[in-house]
Image (cartoon, rainbow, N blue to C red; front, side, top):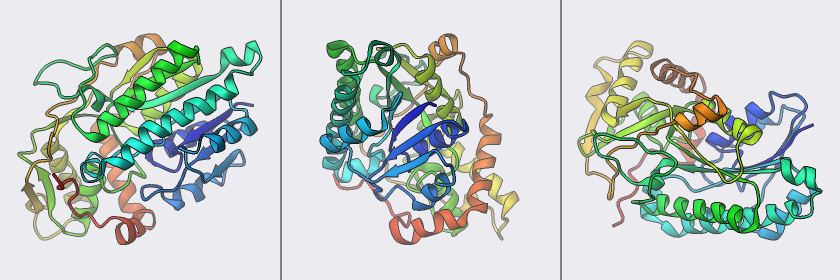
Length: 350
């Protein structure tokens, strides 16, 4: 039986990974999640239907507690996803990002090293610590070129700076202690169960409530979009065949401007849930985000060549499926919109 610890497993990417791991009926998945504003209890309720699933509500910054959990679970793999992730919130309140993303990663690395260092040689060789990061650590691209595993770090926001710091810690635990760490830098994820502060769910839900669709600046900033289920498959492959000490960039190969994304959402909603006027009439250009990176794009040839991974989801079809999911799962997102986040502008405290 394979045993996994997943930090942040009640969140967006973490829950997608848990569903994938639990598709193996012999898997044991223990989620460590503090249940912050972005974690939805409904997501956990659905995961609890799997017999191999368990949730521990705890703070990853508590190193002693993390070490205790890991010793009890005796995992083959630790997937570290728990993080503060929204750039706008990092502008308003950077302290939480430094604490969770930097100190929390240190805590997980030390707790895992405490466990790994006493394993027998065979188990120690098979163990993996998969550290999940972002392409935002690389800063901004111009109109051409791609990020890859050797791109220089140049973070622009408190969020990306905190993730850059956590990447450097993870890499150093491999180089200094020999712990088998593998790092993932992914592009923008989309799909079901994403907290509605992020671009795609925010635009879907604002449109459904006939609220303005706020587009930063001129909407020409470009992102490379990756379906969350494709990302989960990549992470599982890294655990199975990833080389310790290596970094893998994971991208969906689906570059779109923010305005193109919003217009595509409007087009789908015009067909699925028509109103008197087109949804794109709700688009409202607003003051740009401070330090807004112009373009992200990933060269995923390394993970494609070494681990035989490629995205399975076509972006247009994947976006339509995502919109359909939000239309069909109001019970998942409605409490979040009413109690946690109503769609207000964030990231303005400069």
